[in-house]
Length: 611
Image: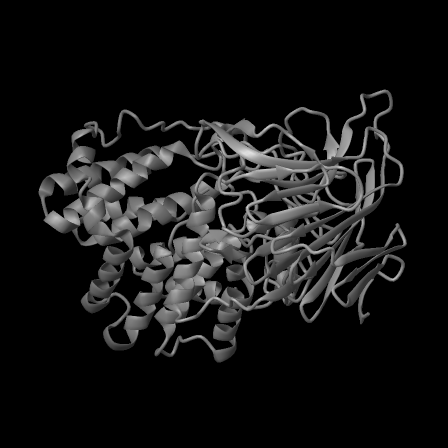
């Protein structure tokens, strides 16, 4: 689903700001509110579509090409009925710009059609958040020209939003309440909604872990009443929602966008954020979510279920704009970063970037919700994405072989992966042995894999010139007897081909990166990969994508027992500087350029020592 700028929040906050000199609902306040809506709706450009939009409108205020009864679960992430509210916004902007009565008439009819028929989505988000956030700003733009009946109708739509839930969902819902309060002239409700939003500027002090079903909201809200916080900003500056699940690229992205505005809007007023609250927002932006941007592209590993076409560029722009609003600079410091609350790691080299997404019994991996991310079943089982140019994985989701996610060891039965119920027993990692540590320019990360009959101990050693990847104890036993045995594979790379590829079985060179096997031969797949976007994010795009991909993997056979692998990814120059000391289920250790890094599985520790 698309979550744009926080217009409801802005309007409500400005209303509070201007009450100090002119009253909450004065003409002066409304003038400022309208000026903000003009800017953030980009109303002049939107208004240019007014003539075409008006000419296509039916007499009853609807449009013939809008699907008003879109109850298709496949469109839960992109509800088609929302097109009506998009056109309502166009007519509101056109009237505000031109003051032509025909645009006001069209907007009134569109508004009445919506609040009288009340289209509904099978996805609660659109009913309680999406529709209110789309309808509210446009209505306030022209509210002085609307009848009391129409204002009540708009408030009816906005009343679907109630202050509840946690994290970014709570903020969005509070926005809807704030908008309704402004339209109805309810100052008490306006203040309540504002305080609800500000309450989410905090660092969580609890660990939510896994949850059995969607009823987890109730227990989280109960705990929050007693001072426990599970979702939102974590102590390591990652962001969780839907349990202990990394959500930097969707809910956490929206949080950064919203809160970057609230900091500015409250500055200089009695409602200004406390210094420690502003510090939280700035640290989250600089030390957390913006770390996923490399050369204008947001990390696919951190995007969660929102991996629609164009998402990596769009998400990066949202975060860069949030930084700019607060006068902050993205931290380009080289070296490692480890996020223990989310089982996630980042390494920023001089000319390269890598991220590692793991999951343990403490965290949830990749969710599959609203028909989004239908293939990403194993995408948090040690996914290692390495970038130099930034576009290595741009829009690869439809064409990817999701059994060969780089870094991941998983079964490959040769069939497409389809969605699964989220979350259910067996769909996540069953061990808490996932850990990492840093010493200077070096980082060691480890993930024990125990999932659906597959076990392995995987280790990654990051250093300034590359990454050493080790696997040991790879064993598979089918959970269902007498079934065909899939091949167990470890993905190494799967990126856009750019330029020449040199393939010497144990040494593959591409884009200036060397992939060096220290234990057997690599396998490569034919370059063209084809897939359907409908299997990834059906509401965004339903076309086919064919891409030439460098698909490197390692085969462990159909019934591996204590299988292993060892390879190096060197984005700079590989000069045989790596020596494997041990690659067993007890100790995984390497010597790299004067430094020894050791992972001790019994102690769950990473140690560093000079050679």
